[in-house]
Length: 140
Image (cartoon, rainbow, N blue to C red):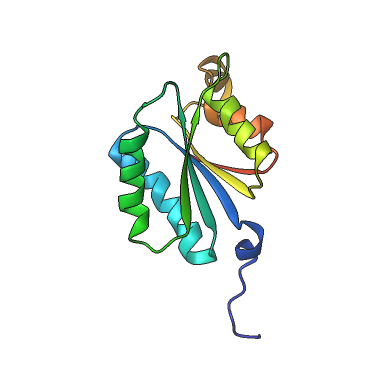
């Protein structure tokens, strides 16, 4: 065991939730790269979550994009779609998903707001970070 690599992260972050939404291809690729890296390096199982405002929202196109990117990398993953409930927000639906299932971490992409502006513009990543029952990684 002396020279063998030991990765505590491999045991700590086994199930990871990654919320996705329609965004620029470069930003989506950045998010997918980080998620897939956890899967490849540490054997994490990744669940991609899309919160749809309405039925038939862009989920199929997004699912195909994720499957094309992640499928060829050999990572265990799932793609889930949740329809946003009345009076709910994307952040509250993500927090519901976290509380209804067991995840070790959630990886979020920030739009770049921080501090008071994040609160003013209803930042999803900040709202999830404050309410999540698990570790949160926010990518800027």
